[in-house]
Image (tube, rainbow, N blue to C red; front, side, top):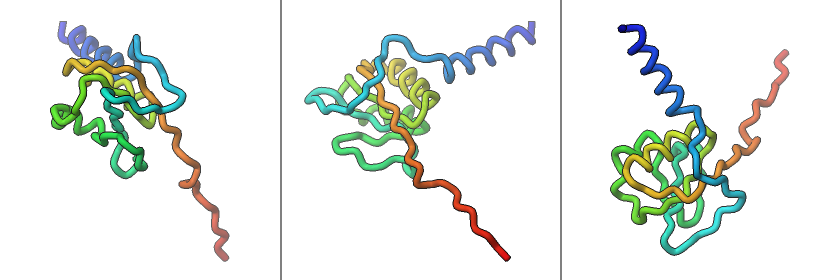
Length: 117
């Protein structure tokens, strides 16, 4: 009985993070609308400035979801895991997620090899 409960908790955690959210479309281009909030859920150190975007990292969504001005949002994330967690949290708090945009990381942080003698 205990193993069944632990197994259910593990399966729920995997579902919550890795199974894509249904009914939310991927956007190719970000466009601003009057009554839609663009919500950037990337970490502060990874996010660049996007005009008109509200920046609340996924880790802070539970604490600061009340500061989002409109109930319709577009999510900007770094990867699918951030996107899934953010959309599920926003839906829990009765937000309507209109779409998501995954911002690809630039290759500026590549390691450079230095030859030492």
